[in-house]
Image 1: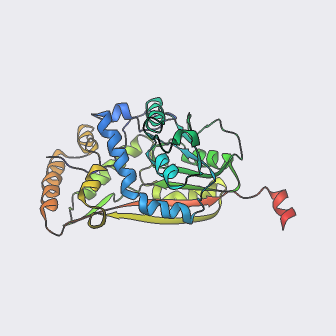
Image 2: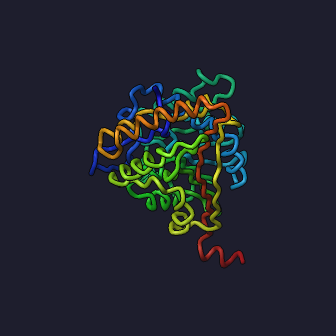
Amino acid sequence: MTVFLFPGQGSQRKGITNLQGSYQITGIARSVEKEIQRLKAQVDLFWEKESKRYIEFGLRDGLSVVELGSGPGFLTEKMLATFPHLKVTAVELDPFLGAYAKDYLSPKNHVSQKYIHRCEILQGSLLDTGLAANSFDFAITRLVLEHLPDPIGAVQEVLRIVKPRGKAVFVDNDFTTHMITHPHIAELGELYHAYCQSREAEGGNPKIGRELPTLLKNAGFSKVNFEVICAHSEIVGDELFLASEGIGIPSKLVQDGFLSSKVLAKIAVEWRNMLKSANHSILRQLYMASGEKPLQRGRAEREK
C-alpha cells in the first residue's frame, strides 16, 4: 500500500544545518529518477494557476528573470515555453540537479525551441548567489525558503539582485494542513503535526507560507501582495495529484520517533478507502507573496 502525503522535502540529521538546507535529492529519494519525475508532476499540478499569478505580479515576455533554487529545470522550461523572448538565469546549489537541468534544457531534448540559448544555469546558494546587484527584472523562489536556516537572509539576497522597481515572487508551503481530503482523514492532522515537529527540530520552518508577506516587508520589499492557490483532484485528476506526492517521509517520521506506527497504519487504510470513494476529493494549497524593490531614496525623491 502506497500512501502519497508529502511533496518530498528532505530530512537532515538532527542538529545539522547548512547553506543548502534540508532538501538533498540524493539523500532523500529511494529512486532519484522517480523523485525527478515527482518534481515534474508537482510543477504541472499548479502551473496553470501559478502562471496566471506570476503574470498578475508582473511577469511578461522580454524580461530578465532569475529563478532561485531551480532544481531540475521544470519551472524554467514552463517559463521559456510560455514566453518566447524571456531570458532566465537559473540558480541551483545541488550540482546533480544543476547538471540535470542543463541536459534537460539542451537542444538535443528541445531541438525546435533551443531553450538553453535563453537560459543560463549557475551553481550557487540562495543565501549568497554571487550575482551582481540590481541585475534582474523579476525573481522567482519556489518551495525553497522552508528549507533554509536563514529565510530572511535569502529574501534580502533576492532584494539585492533585483533591479529597482523589479518584482520578486516567493512560493511556499504551510504544513499545518498540507492536503485536505473528502472523505476526511482525521489522522492526517497528526501526521502534519509530526512533520512540523521534525522540521522545526532541524531548524526549518514548515509553516512559512503564512509568514511570507511579513518576511518580504521586513527584508525591504514594498507593494507586498499575497495569494493562495489551490489544486483540486476533481479538476486535475487523481493521477497528476498522486504523481506529485512523495512516499518516504511518513515512514521516516515513525523511524525518528515523531509519529506512531499505528497512526501511519490507520492513515494507509483510510487513504485507500478515500480513493475508493466515488465522490472523493483531494486538495492542496500553495502560498505566494510578491513584492517590488523600492527605488533608492535619493532617486525616488528626484522623481516625485
